Image (tube, rainbow, N blue to C red):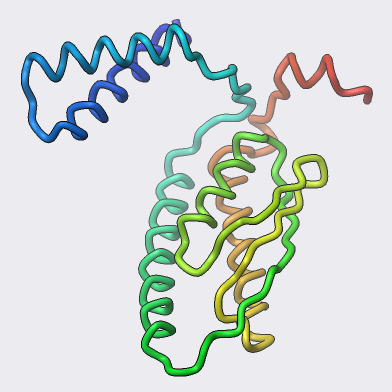
Length: 179
């Protein structure tokens, strides 16, 4: 039942994206969106992603609000840097994420990439290390701020998706883990 629900949700989402790309709702756009969505989901399927935890809506809402605030603040900071005559000092910083799921790791990387002034350059999936190019790290305070932000993001993601009582490793991981 869950698989069917996810497939229907994916079809509806792809149809909505198709309609938004065309800019108007019409029968032709809905039908062509359905055709494109079916082609994408049947002929070009994504590999299954194991979902190993539960979603906690209150924690997820905290995550969304916090990330929205970070996006707003960092957008203002990048705009101020653009107006400043001196070029900012940038650096590549390393951070370790204590997340269990590859899906949550990918979500963390996407959140960091969305934040203006950051771009994830490399992901060490096995050690859960990420290397991030950060704009304006001219002081120890700015570097500490980046690491505090990554720690806060990690805590919010764990609270939203990977709480220990709800964590059930997928069957695929249990088969491949030697431990």
